[in-house]
Structures are given as structure tokens and as C-alpha cells.
Amino acid sequence: GAGVSQTPSNKVTEKGKYVELRCDPISGHTALYWYRQSLGQGPEFLIYFQGTGAADDSGLPNDRFFAVRPEGSVSTLKIQRTERGDSAVYLCASSSHGINTDTQYFGPGTRLTVL
Amino acid sequence: KNQVEQSPQSLIILEGKNCTLQCNYTVSPFSNLRWYKQDTGRGPVSLTIMTFSENTKSNGRYTATLDADTKQSSLHITASQLSDSASYICVVSGGTGTASKLTFGTGTRLQVTL
Image (cartoon, rainbow over all chains, first blue to last red; front, side, top):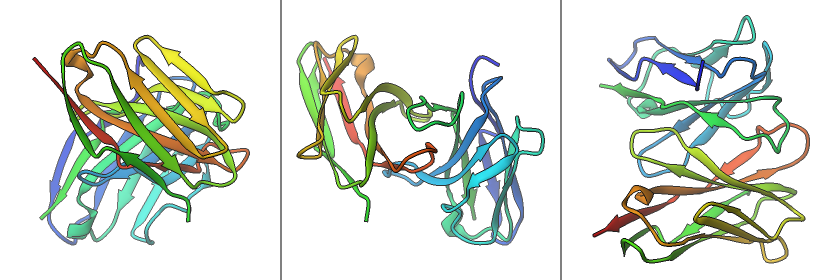
């Protein structure tokens, strides 16, 4: 596609529920990143994929968070037993190779609200 | 702890005026520094990226500078336009190899008015 897309754009859920957030990276980009952005803050790194594998998941806050990228393209961020503190905008980005001088192209984000 | 601090937190300027945004970082080892523009409700968009050996880089009316010795960067916006109203985020990449080790500043919120 022309850019990184994310669905849904908004998600409202109740505390304790399970949610899935989807990211479609730019076609051909091997690297994919998930970030979380709270109001008034900069994005916070969660996880980075190189191809199908998670090259760095050190930013995942706890074991309720999990992400997959089974075919090296689309990725899904999964959050179990959601808590109110999970409310944030979840941003996805992709880059062509994943080397540290690559430009990361961001999607519009999914705004998650946990009631 | 790796940190990126930006100032001012927010800024209001008149259309046509220039402004400069500041970024100080403590990320080590340093790989590169990026400036992103983030419109409200949108994902960040890359403006510039500078490695250790680069002192300045321009992208249209945006000029970024980097002093790796003092660990400071600035983003200068010339002849501001209403469309420049956004948050400007300084991002520092540390370490080698993967691009995952990005440390983001909290951003400077710029508002350009008539």
C-alpha cells in the first residue's frame, strides 16, 4: 500500500477484555515496530520485528502484551485482560531494512480506551 | 538512563516568523538523531535524520543542527506557515545494528497563528 495503515482507528473496551490491533506496513518493508503514545508524551517503544521474528521485545510492559507477524507483513498487537492504564494511542511503523539509519514510516495509530 | 529532553514544551508564533526548537539528549552510545513532525491525530512524519558526523541537515524550510560533543540538537523553522502547527519530536537512536533502540522526547507543541 501507499503507507502504513492501522485498524481500527478507535477501540473502546471494558476492563478485563481482550483486544487485537492490526498493522499493515508499507509493502516490501522488512522491519515493523510497535509504539505506545500516552497523551502529551512521545511514543514509547514496545516491540520490533525483522521479518517474521521479534528481534527486540524489550519494550513490552508485561506478559499481557503480545505481538505476532506470522508472514512477515501484517502484524497484530494483542492485549489480554486490559487495564485502564493501557489506554493510549498505539502506533505502528515500518522501515525498509531495519538498520538504524532507516526512516521509519508511521501509521495513524489506534486509539485504545479501556473503561 | 537514556533520555531526550525538549524545549520549549509549547510555542506560539505569528505566521511568517522563524523559530528554533531545542533537544538535549543523554543517549549513549549515539547512532543518529531524528526530528519528526506529528500532526494532531496522526502518526509522526520524518523530517531529518543526522548521524554523528553530520552537523546540519535541511528539508525545505526545516533545518536541523547537531552538536554531538554537547549532545544538543536544534530544529529551525523558517518563514513559518499555519500548516507548521504540530508537535515536533526529537528522537535519538542508540546502540548499533537494529533501529529498535529509539528514545523519543516528549515533543514541542508549535502553534502558528495569523
